Amino acid sequence: LNVTTSGGNTTIQIDRDGLSGLIPGNNFTTLLVLQGVTTTETELLNNGQILY
Image (cartoon, rainbow, N blue to C red; front, side, top):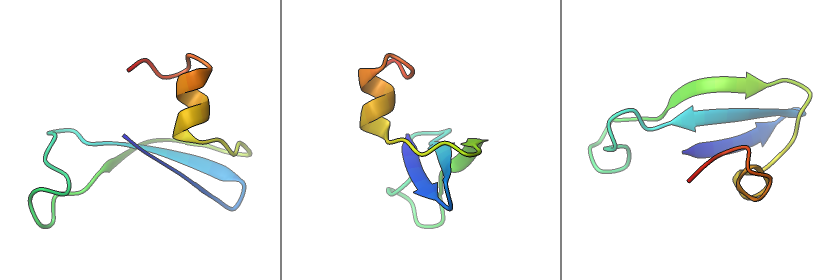
């Protein structure tokens, strides 16, 4: 899971095959963009919005 904020939006990306960072060129895939929302992965976890 990768959560980034930019320009007042939060982008949530997933690692579809678990190999991002292990194989060159294998990247995260954007799952959704929360427009007008700035948050962090920690906040999403603490609020129960992402289950781990």
